[in-house]
Image (cartoon, rainbow, N blue to C red; front, side, top):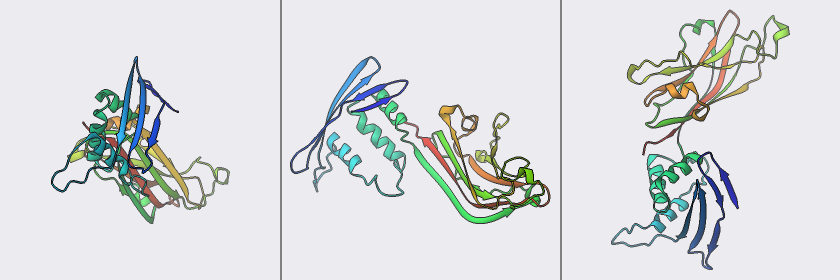
Length: 261
C-alpha cells in the first residue's frame, strides 16, 4: 500500500503486481482516488515485439520501454531531456486523464536538470571588489518553467583576524558570495525585490565549509519568478577590506525546469 497526498489529488494506491512464471509479463492494477472520483487502470506490460519489417506502437511496448531504460545507472538523471518527459506524458495519457498525468508528473518532480561544476582553488581579495568576477556561470536556462535552483559552494576565508571575539561566527565576516543574473540577449532583470546574497564565510576559519542554497518556485521565490529562458546565473565571490581573502575550492549550480507541453 502506497499513500501519496497532495492539495489537488490523493492516491490511496492499492497496487497489485503479478509476474508469470517465465517473467515475460507484468500485470499491475492501480486504483486512483482523485478528487471526487476514482480512476481504475490495469497495465499488462510485456517485452516489445521484435519485427524487422515494421515498428508496432502499443501501450504495452511504450510502458515497457520506459521501465527498461537504465534509470538506475549511477549519475544518470531522468528525464534526460524533454523527449523523455513527452514520452512519459504520452504513455500515461493512454490510461489516465491528461490533467491527472500533469499532476502526477508535478508531484513526482519529473523535471529537466542542468548542472555546471567547477573545481579549482581560487582566492579573491579586495582588488576583486569592483570587478565582480564570477567563479562559475551556468548554461542558459532551458525553455520551460524554472522549478528549483540549487547552489553549492566550498570555501573559507584567510583563517585569521584581530577580532578574536568573532572567530567561528558570521559576525563581522567580510568574505561572502552574491548571485549574478545575466538576462538573455541583454534583457534587464528586475532584482529590486530579490535577495542576491548567497552565503558568508565563517569568520577566521581555514577549514573549508560547504554552503548550500536552494530556491523553490513552490516557496514563492522572487528569484525564480524573475528568471526567463536564456538567462545565466553566476556565483560571485567577494571580499572587502585589506587582509580579507575569499578562497573558493569548488562550486556547482543546478537548475531544474519543467518543460512546456
